[in-house]
Image (tube, rainbow, N blue to C red; front, side):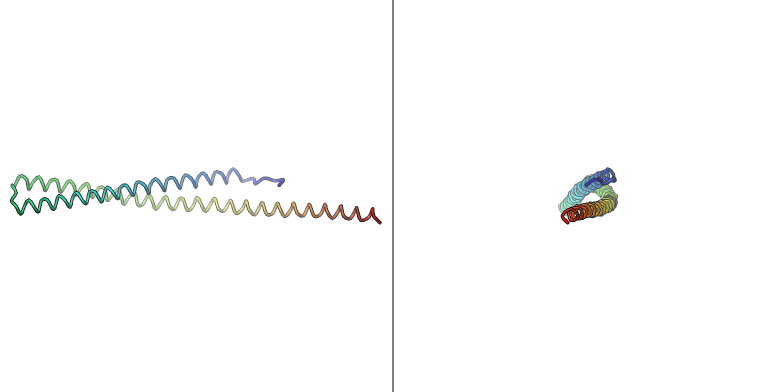
Length: 146
């Protein structure tokens, strides 16, 4: 092939952008998964605290212990709410990163299609030149043999 694809550097750049978008998405998915585990753990701790409070209330509890349980439950609940808010933000980030990856992949695919068309066009032109050269050789050989 006589002519290289002139947008090869752009295609490589698009590939790097797509790779970066994949890494960002993978990272945000990993963080989202870890946060979901934290939320589940926090919910379990909060449920355990509620159950412990119920058990202690049935067997008798001092007012001071009751207040400590309430403070602990409120703190755990606030921590859980904070984690849920972080998860919502992270979910939006994941959605955004998915969109960026889709766009990067689409842009790269467009350039790849353009490259394939250019290569097919170049191959067609090369075949035409080769055919014309062979026809010319055949005509010259044909004139000399007469």
